[in-house]
Amino acid sequence: MENQEIAEIPIIDDNEELEELKRLRREFHQHPELGWTEFWTTARIAELLEDMGFDVLVGHELYQGGLAELRWGLPDDETLQGFYTLAQERLGENKYLEKMKDGLTGLVAHIRGGEGGPGIGFRFDIDGLPILESAGHHHQPTQDRFSSPLGTMHACGHDGHVAMGLGLAKRVCDNIDSLTGDFYFMFQPSEESARGGFVFSRHELVKKLDHFVALHLGVVKERKLVCDLRFLSSRKFEVTFRGRSAHAALSPQEGKNALLGACTAVVNLYSIPRHSSGLTRLNVGQFHSANAKNVISELAGFQLDVRGENEEICDYMVESAKRILKGAAEMYALELELCDLGFTISTPASPGLKTSIRDAALKAGVPGAAIVNEHFVIGCEDAPFIMKEVQENRGQAAYICLGSPTRGGHHNPEFDFDEDLLIWGVHVLWELALDLSSR
Ligand SMILES: [Zn+2]
Ligand SMILES: [Zn+2]
Image 1 (cartoon, helix red, strand yellow):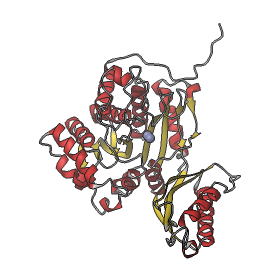
Image 2 (image 1 turned 180 degrees about the vertical axis):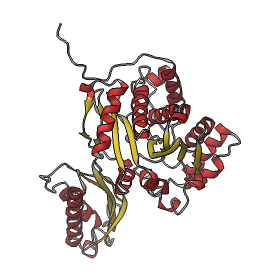
Image 3 (image 1 turned 120 degrees about the vertical axis):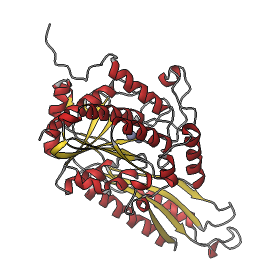
């Protein structure tokens, strides 16, 4: 028989370490919290890491130096309070919880090995999504009774990221006497809306990092390890057209129709020519105009999301969109208001670190044919904010993908993944940590 090279990451059978990772993943899966409300999640991770021997920065201790003010898109007070109360009920008296009031969630844990080594940082995102999890019996979390009944769900695999982060932290801790350098574990909140990464990128500890790695599971449809997963740059806006209301039958000539301006803008936004240098995306959502049917609309608007393969192409999309929005406002004598809703950037991996990741994957047992150098995904991420900051400080950064088909797909009520990926993640990151620490 011909000896075929294995082109996928092999399935690993249960062993003691994988059992523990699965147990952790399932515990976190049952308590998904939305961006900036990860109170229980943060407190639980902090407790586990402190028990291992890490120094843990939580809440106002973490968000010093104006970081709290850099957050945007915070949920309303009722939502914040709701999640806080739920965490309180689960945890009882808790020393971490109090520090996180007002949504100061997420944490950074630090442990020091021997003198003279590098600063090594890992990022794991911890937020869930506002999705009602499937109660279908074919859905593994329902079958095995670890699904979430709360209307929030870990439907992107961040529960798995938390478990891998804790698994890696345990190995680092258990072997700290033979390691050199400083290890920083960032458990980052609010990735889904691409907000937490920006805030964490401004933390002073990022300047201490010589190497930085983030990781996502799933994403690509085969069990492959991608050394450099790239994302699109994106900008999001709230667009508002202001006109003048009037009786639509008695005096239409007195009105300035904001609805018409908004409609004209939307149709023409979709006609921005594609860019020959790379991918572009554009979409409009939340279109609204509250006027009655016999009233000329005085206020209409929508949310706009544009994306590009790099900053230059994204700028092209933004400038084109602005020109169309201004033109539509002009046509109907309207005022135009543009409000920023956030942005993400695209950052390629540092070449040296990419090579180290390949070597680490091979050492961890990933077949060579299952390792992919780079892959472009039509999505957005906020870890590139941290990556860029590290790279600008002459450090190296990369985003790894632990690829695998998933059930239901990301952000779907039936999302689920092969849990043996958890130990693959720990194996690869551990080999990488060993290599980087010895330099
Ligand atoms: Zn997601
Ligand atoms: Zn995700």
